[in-house]
Amino acid sequence: MNLLPSGICFYLSVAICWLTAEVDATWWYMGTLGSQVMCDNIPGLVNKQRQLCRQNPRVMQAIGAGMKDWISECQHQFRSHRWNCNTTARDHNLFGRLLLRSSREVAFVYAISSAGVVYTLARACSQGELDSCSCDPTKKGSSRDAKGSFDWGGCSDHVEHAMRFSQAFVDAKERKERDARALMNLHNNRAGRKAVKRFMTLECKCHGVSGSCSVRTCWLAMADFRRTGDHLRKRYNGAVQVAVNQYGTGFTAAHTHFKRPSKNDLVYLEDSPDYCIRDHESGSMGTGGRVCNRTSRGVDGCEVMCCGRGYDTSRVSRTTKCECKFHWCCAVHCRDCHQQVDVHTCKGQT
Ligand SMILES: *[C@@H]1O[C@H](CO)[C@@H](O)[C@H](O)[C@H]1NC(C)=O
Ligand SMILES: *[C@@H]1O[C@H](CO)[C@@H](O)[C@H](O)[C@H]1NC(C)=O
Image (cartoon, protein in one colour):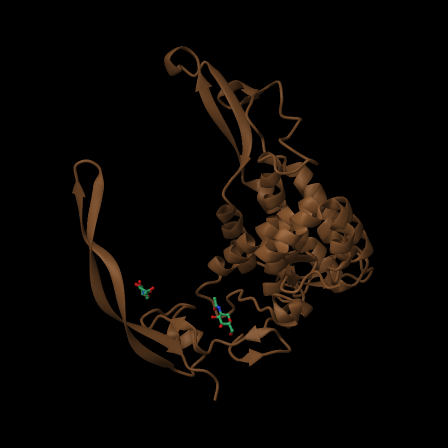
């Protein structure tokens, strides 16, 4: 029985199927009785992951539902880059053969996926969607920060719990192997998880006579996932190329003038392809058909984006809101303006 007719599976370490709405409904119907069947039908899971999946079907479902968010964060971060984190349903693996490599881009995908699992899970816990977790139970009583003392209140995101689960589940696959790629993936998975924790902020509410703020209740909340995305994107830019040390237990910098990687750095083993042409083996989609900016000298410029192949220009009509007027009270009326704009797209390989 194939329960996942149209589920798109994402099986690098995060072996989860991104279920379509239809399959999602089936899932609900099956309830926990069916979770064994469900988990047994997700391809690419190692035993430990199947076990965690069967024990936590609702957690799996929450993580699956969050997946499109971190994939779109990846696409946002690389929107004007030759490699744009484009996904493909081919081979039931969203990133095609890209993930068989150990390039800088793969480092980023692993880091942002494990960060995404932590974020999604902690949020689901806080929102009371899961039986297995809720708000951080250790944030109770009172505490102090730079502004003085406060009482814990509200709901602090239980990131520690989410990190533990994510580590157990996501890392399980890499722990089966002890080769260079597994070490690389484990390192980047951890860097991703830590990136979420880094952007937790204390949010407070003031109480006391006429808002004097003599009493505060505070909770620790995760920042928007964009912060994690921005951070990991910077780490991608500064990623360190490494080689495995002679004992096979850790890394040394691949080049003598490179720094040794810290726990927060992303690491990679292989140079990246240039992503100019479509190449199934290296997981490159090529830049043919991508929109580029004619006047930019940066990575989004036609020169760089199209890899010197040139571009086509087409004139398209865009509708924008314009001449907006505010009417008392409270409406804004705009006119639709039509504008002709030139759109440049890279020529494909010939
Ligand atoms: C991703 O690639 C597919 C196939 O090449 C293409 O149809 C799609 O528009 C691309 N998406 C993005 C966001 O570039
Ligand atoms: C194209 O690049 C130029 C120069 O970097 C920039 O000023 C302009 O806003 C860009 N246009 C678009 C449509 O992004």
